[in-house]
Image (tube, rainbow, N blue to C red; front, side, top):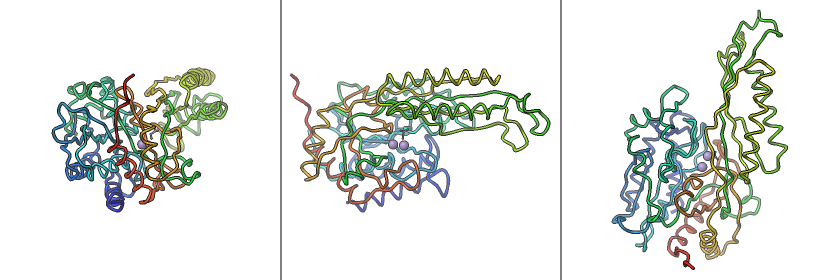
Length: 403
Ligand code: GLV
Ligand code: MN
Ligand code: MN
């Protein structure tokens, strides 16, 4: 079993938009090819498949209509130059568990979400938000770095922007959502444990900053007469780093930066960059957004640079349901493994799905705690244990007694 799961993960990792590295962006040709491959695996596991209006691939138990449904899944989009396991592991592990499962008293839906990373358009969690009815239709007019809008890309993909509201699930029909994911951090490895139960997921905000100064000749414009957008960005980015370091448990990252015109002999007239801020406490994150934004405005004003700051993502911290954590703990203990609980610093589709139903996550150890790089690595043994835990969980799953 474990070998076929690892083989499938390797086969899926070969599907990329950029040969030589794994980059599989939302609504790209590689996303389409990945859906085709996974569709075959879902059907092989006895599931009926469909691609929904926003480009999620859904595999459903046959005759699911009218039955309560348990949702499983994760995402199949990736960051640029990604590892093979982030997101993809959760989808293929769920398919592996369901394939060997006898009939259950509830229906299962495995969803391969199309946009968790937000690597192509400014928004993130588009697929999972659509399933909850919380997709912001304004996102359809946002553009990627080539100027293509999400709405046009979705239509070209075969999706149907107008039908997105119709894929919202009815909360009355959904029991829970359970996501398997690699840990993306070092805790399980340090404790020498293959799996752990997530207690809560840190909240996250993303901002897009555009600075406009004046482009000019690098040889002729005196230093005192410049309005250099990149120099302003550099000062701001150092402030963001210093602020992030000063607040316990908060992290702040500038992960992408573009300058225009981008030539050695031209003064940068425009700079755009992203800010990603995360914290377990929503109040600390909100305070960070306000404080950082205010200081960026000040720096821009001092340098006579125009600044526009847009918030592109805002997801509150999410608590995993304690009764689901308990049932995962029982499944882990039944494997004769110690039960470990840990928080998630990374974002996940479960954050969006929490608006629909109780959510839980099972983390799998990854080598060196490394993720979002090609060096991401898990062992077949750990993958096998995670599938076994999920299998036990699904067999014993029961809703909590209502008081
Ligand atoms: C997704 O990996 C995120 O945490 O941004
Ligand atoms: Mn990721
Ligand atoms: Mn992920």
